[in-house]
Structures are given as structure tokens and as C-alpha cells.
Image (tube, rainbow, N blue to C red; front, side, top):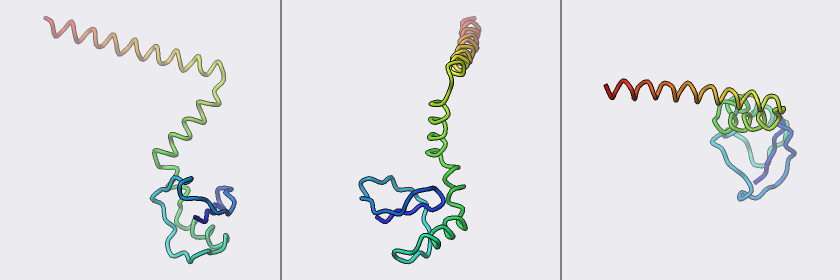
Length: 102
């Protein structure tokens, strides 16, 4: 497969299909081995990057990179927020168990 990503800093290169993860996004009406300039024009006119950013896959990658770049204090704040959420949930479960027994 000939891969080219002029708007995403992916250099034009040949890759095996086994090494790729294909998506449903298609650039319509492109001739075989079209030049990078034309690929960029169609890529931007079809708003492929905006469509990609709306996918669950892209959001998961963004979450992963954000979490990877957390500081120690940020990780501590996340831990405390999880603990607070767990306390609220367990307290509500206990209330509902007590009320269902009566």
C-alpha cells in the first residue's frame, strides 16, 4: 500500500497491508499514485482529520497520551477523585440495600 499523510506528517512510503490498521475513511476519486499535493487537497476538502478526531479510537489515543503525561500530583488527584466516587457509590448502594430489606 502506498501511504501518504501530508497533513499528518506521514512521509510517502510503501507499507505492507499487514502492518496497517485500516479505517473506513476513503479519499474519493483519486487516481493511482497521485501526487502528494492532490492527496492533501482531497484530505482537507473531505475533512478526514476532523472525522478521525470524532472516532472512539482517536479519543482513546488522546486519553492515553494525556494520562501518560500526568505529573505525580495529577496522578494523586485522579486517585483521590476515584476514591471519592467509590465512597459515594458504595454509600448509595448501602442505602438502597437497607431500604429494600424493610
